[in-house]
Length: 159
Image (cartoon, rainbow, N blue to C red):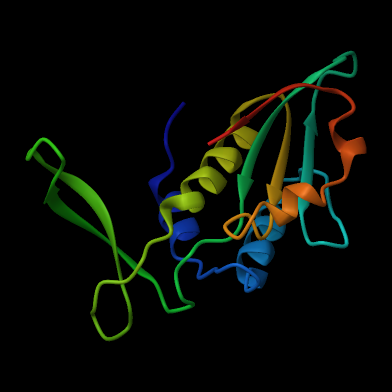
């Protein structure tokens, strides 16, 4: 699978915070529409998507991510930079800055999960995905999720 760094940078650039997740919800639902993947949004604003190319599939794998982060809503400009990692090796990294050029939170938890789910929806022939809101403050989205969506899920993985 070829990784789409542009999609990753787009996802990381979406400002989102618990209870201020409208921009991420709009981003995900627009992406699903553009990619022809059926979905619905429940009353709590959780998103449920199902990609099915095999009519005979009995149980789906399911991927899960959440749409909120702990960072304040701010403009996020993602830049590629060469930075040292934990082993002090200099490697390409993505770093976030606000409009004033100051470092800001990039929201990797859980925007990297959102990105992973979108990539897998694009690549795999049969997959369900759930995107829960308000997870950083006590799993409120998943607690209020639609249990019927998971009736034909064989297993779920959260990134």
